[in-house]
Length: 409
Image (tube, rainbow, N blue to C red; front, top):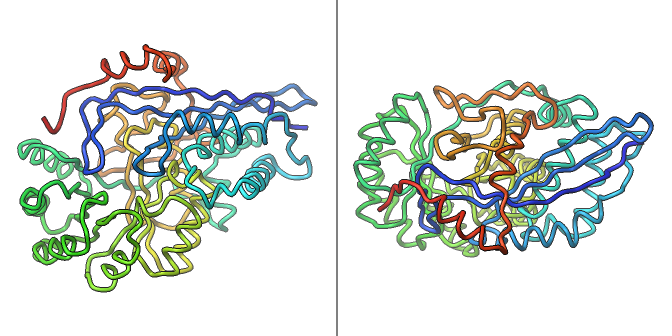
């Protein structure tokens, strides 16, 4: 029988090559939660280790690394530790059923505890898939009655920055072959218009341009932005208003030609159901860490398909190759998403936590790794080096050392 014999929770601080800024935050490093799960076959003594990661953001789900770790240790992990998997089912199916049972008993899919649950869920699924000898993407695709695709094409994201930096990033995405670019807006109306105008000028007519306001506007300013940018063919406006202003989202979805995509308004399966029922958007930005893991993300994808809502793969700024691989597995196991974000690991992180390079290649192409589970192996040296105790003075000094070249100073 297969038993969950150990669950380890830690925090890492990953320094950036430069500061990343949008209307809700600016950061030059990321503090992430890492979970390692050990499963053991009691009959043979064979073991497997699973990896999970989440990126808590208090301005998204209200979680921090401290609250996430407390939730995992106090509420989630005890429900799984020393549990045996159902021997009448394959390990992945058995552990997913156990995850669903725990999530239901603790109302995980109805509360904003996604980052807390995600890291543990990923580690459990990763370990079970390794024992079974399958990849997560293959397993998820089979559950959906599909075959997993081998790769996806990411779009680029441009944060706030000086005008010269903006031009440099636009040229980079153009010559690197990206077909979609999302611009962070909402800081200043004149700068927003300049950013959109410059993007269309440099990228040309064939590139899909999207914008993300990160809750910076209200109905009137969103409508005004839409009117002023009619000539630039903006495909979508993401989270233009604060997350709880659903009535404004409903009206904007009705009156604007641009697709309204929700991000901060979509953090739980329950919120996905409410947004779909109220017709408050045209698209879902699904970030695995934000919504509670792969199983929750799949539920949200299913809700989107049922209601004719487009799906966008989102990414947390600062996620390592662990989360990047998990997001890619989800994407490769499903029908084509409207847009894919993330996989900027080499360009953003000074060093990654995985031995595999999960950075998107030319044209934004991201291939599924060959490994079992989520497909990546941890660089133990980097994991140990970047691990921090958030209650200690070491974490504060590490944060200072992590600051890099800034895009917005």
